[in-house]
Image: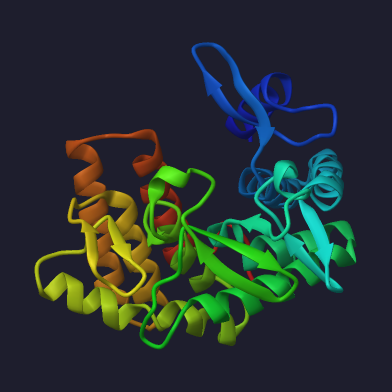
Length: 282
């Protein structure tokens, strides 16, 4: 509890904006970019709800509600009668909207809908599932790092940075199978399970790469912790627990050899999300 409060106090004092959303980039002792990112806001609100329950602290629930209202007001858009979770406030004015499929957190949206009483989160969860089901083939294509959405329609894109070239499965999309694997709904977990045959074959044929074209062609063969944690999500959803645990161990070893913030974060999150119920039960 003491450590959580220290982290939240620092976050509130240094990153939280007047609309309660969080500036996404901190560098060299200050905010380098005040724009919020929807996944960070969603994860922060989810964490506050977990803390409110675990520590019996209603103040954290109130903080989660305030961030939740900011998400619905600034990071969701309605097009063609459908409510869509967009990448950030900057994406609301775009047509079609920029969407990062890895921001879809079925468990987080479910907890926010229940914990805040806001119907909008349930609507975002339904749209997120429809989008994911269109982006994840059986067994291919792989889901993209970025996409653009108009209502329930969604198409892969290279992302905001035009220099990326073709749409790809990379450091963003690797989070998708982990988030889907811990969903309460069996149909959502099945989407993550669809990816496991591809990753199982890749591991057998030389290793899981850090980036692929959406048809499965390797774009960057580097082995990274994040890519292995993503594959572990697919294994978990498919019921391959021994493969999941082996991949998580390999990811941990890679991060020890070449530690990075992003890699370490997802090594920790992957193990907590896939092997425990510390972030909440269904």
